[in-house]
Image (cartoon, rainbow, N blue to C red):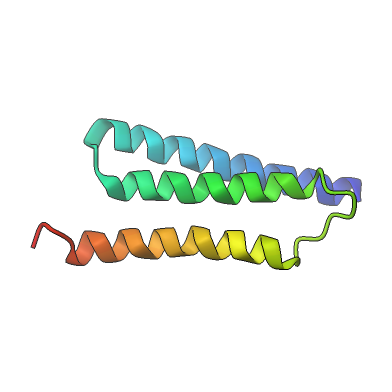
Length: 88
């Protein structure tokens, strides 16, 4: 259990670091594409880190899948908006 908790913490930290990088890119360019990725990685990192505080940690719960689905839908929406958005 300790190794699993450590690895989940490493994954959560990596997601938060990725979110900070995308937030920095958004700050430089003001492109909503980077903001969507930062939000998505933040949701992913918080979702993974909350698993550590549950009484019975289980990453396969439906709530975790819904949070991941929300994260992926945000990325998908950002990609579609970037390709077919207002700029064309």
